[in-house]
Length: 84
Image 1 (cartoon, rainbow, N blue to C red):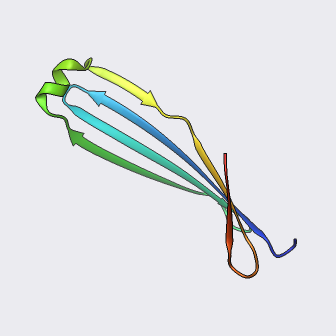
Image 2: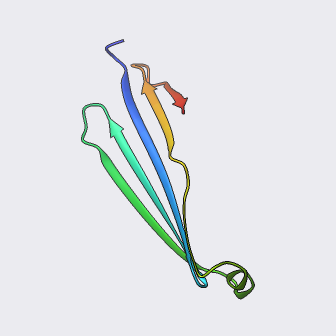
């Protein structure tokens, strides 16, 4: 069991709509044994068609549930994933 390394991935998605623009923010936390934790933030902004922007309210913030994946890698290099 000493030869196993654990890797924990946490992913959060936040969606904001403001008028005719939609902004999606994706935050990825990576924790690996023996290394310092990493955080990767990706922001994507798109323009919505006018038909959709007229139907939706002017400002919405939606935060989706956090997705957690734990990966254990053995000495032979075969990963084993545990999803929560």
